[in-house]
Length: 363
Ligand code: AOF
Ligand code: ZN
Image (cartoon, rainbow, N blue to C red):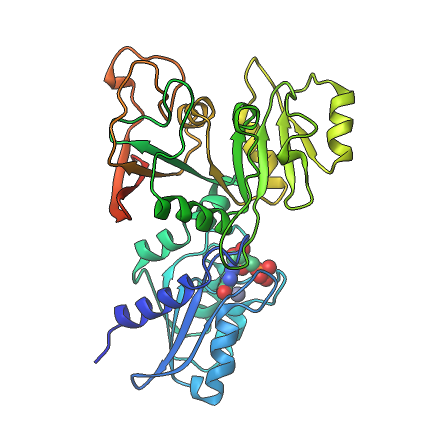
């Protein structure tokens, strides 16, 4: 006999298949079960398209009567691009609803559950809640902070180096780890680097995979507008580019970049760009997640400002040594280890010959 946990796990697995495809919306899975038999299932596939519950009820038809609905996120109560799922649930004839996590969207936030409870339907909230929140970590962060979810990606040697003192870095990690980065780029709305990286490597920052893939928006932090007009990132035919710069800029250069299709966002600049303001502005542009790909000064600024929500660190089985080789988070020197930014390791796995560590800010 399958339990609530088992069915919720199935709904979560279903939701996970749409990961990276629903932005700005969350991933959601729904399963309808009657007498131990699945009579309907659905997932939210894309923003603007029907919610998970709609698909599940459509599949179940009249079998929804007296069934139990397992849904990974609280059914919505608002008219967004689609009508409220809570009304659909209320009128469906289900006798029980099991929800993994409440929807932090201020337009929903408990109201969906309220509608269903008020209709006299039994509701249980919190089954596999941690897993559900984790699955929608990006969406949860967006709703609570109104800023993009920032993932820092680092590839380093066992002794924490990302390049030799000359800047030579090809390659630290093996082919499989490098390929994974393209899968990551394919999943996020945007990828961010500092202008130093643009000047040093002239990267394209596009997604290169064997299958059709999405190019994230390229964001360049460039306080003095040093991005060359003929830089690969200024060519917007393959992917969009946003340059985040200061308030006092060369307007001719800005116009030339704009003519090439580059969008310029100006934020306060106190010797250093106001990254918190930048994050708010980028969220207003519709960017829900950002892959931070360096360089090490930009990484350090984000880390010290508490703007990194997740760290993905690839560790190669190599030792580079040296006094002047580059490290992933440079920034200012600190005197004691007490000043370290504290993280929590979540998982570690092997990718080809390298290790991949997932870490989150502690607390
Ligand atoms: C659900 N089931 O499958 C999803 C929900 O613009 P809309 O109408 O698509 O609404 C988007 C919001 O609805 C989103 O921000 C989140 O609060 C909720 N998503 N809710 O009941 C679903 N995807
Ligand atoms: Zn809904």
